[in-house]
Image 1 (cartoon, helix red, strand yellow):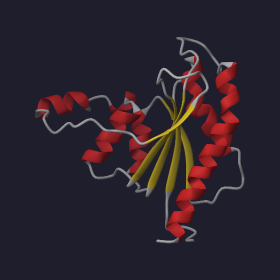
Image 2 (cartoon, one colour):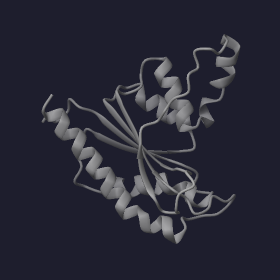
Image 3 (cartoon, helix red, strand yellow):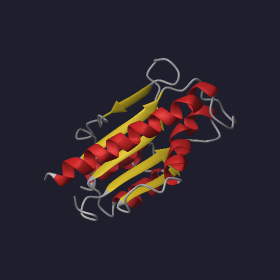
Image 4 (cartoon, rainbow, N blue to C red):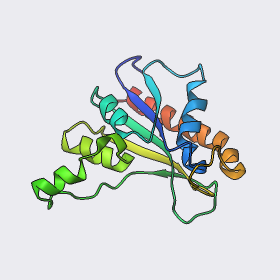
Amino acid sequence: MSDVGYRLLVVGVGNVLQGDDGFGVELAHRLMARTDLPDHIKLMETGIGGMSLIQELMYGYDALLILDAYQNNGEAGQLYLLEPILPDLSGLKPHELRDYFSDTHYATPMRALNFLSRVGQLPKIVNIIGCEPEEIDDMTLGLSEIVKAAIPKAEKMTIDWINRHLQAEAYT
């Protein structure tokens, strides 16, 4: 396995002022406190600012894992490993595309991924670890107890994802 050739980005997104929407940020901070990850694994949190994600991915990565709250009408605390499905923007007129991408500072992760795809900077591998929120309220600090309890399992899922991709790279 190469020590520097294969670059992975793990990014936590969400709004910590809206309760369980801060799941991805909380998980990213927990992962950043670890000392056992290789140097070429970049961990960061972007909060709700999509521009930071776009700028970081412009440096070139082989794989991206986004950590985020994910509403899927499941049970609160349920974890998902997903592949994003980007909307087809090919039918949009130039002014519609401009409007779609006009505010990259407050871009959702999907909008940021769409932008990166259009400029050829989207990694070959993109996954999302999402957690079903119990509640996403305006102006609520901290995660609900059930989402907080899902953090250790989500951390293990993240480490397993990293290890799978590092092992796969070792054989390519």
